[in-house]
Length: 111
Length: 225
Image 1 (cartoon, rainbow over the protein chains, first blue to last red):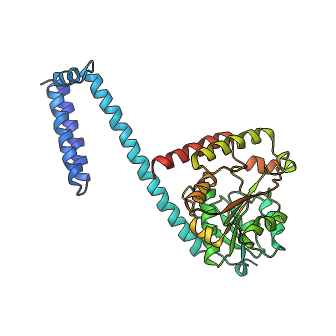
Image 2 (cartoon, chains in turn brown, purple):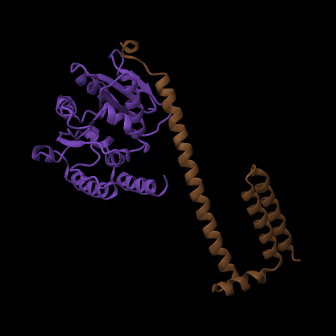
Image 3 (tube, helix red, strand yellow):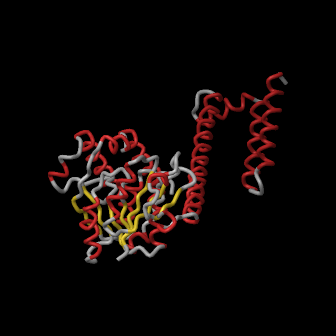
């Protein structure tokens, strides 16, 4: 095992476990996290595997395949974040509106 | 008939006071919604008998209109009129705007700068081209074809105001309204409206870049509910 492999495996496991424990009770998310950790470690230990899968899928190199998957994952992440932000926006709007309506001043208060 | 004029205000100046004063003697109820201005809009309407609300944070024009409309309904409004704070809509045109609702012919009446040649000529050329584009895009997105787009001067019957709920907080609410018109099968009509462009109102108005944003907002809205 090379030095870089040790570092990468340590990081993958650490980040994966953090993610695993921060996901409350969503079983599917937890299983996905575990699967991702396992795949990450496997690829670090056997880099040639990515090449073989890439060739099988018609992609030139394993690195390219990983890069494509990475791009997809990032886009998906942004989309999820965007949806979350929109939902949050709506909550802030409701909150601000409730406060504004609660504290509304009548013409008599103003004159 | 309780007519409520809802005026969203964000960082407006002295002009807010004159706009409100121009409305006062018509006997309408006036609702000012301060959309989280840096310096509270209250200072401009001191001593004037209006309803005043304030968003604790800035949300956008659409959100302010919705807050004002919800409030007006809770006060028993029969007709809700949306009106710009910057004095570009003449108060004298409100009776024309609300007449079709009073007659029971329409649920929503929209002001248009493009029904009369003399109103049209007041619109700066660059703005006119931009609005043409806006009409086209709004029409394609909502399948509601109007002669004007993003005219802030409009009246809603109580029933229409109850059924239309703006979810777009920003300027995209104007196009969102068209969607509601179609989905809720509301009867609508356009009436001529004059916009008095002043240096102030042009400065406060929307830029070209904002129009692009509006289109993107609405496309996203179609994709992600």
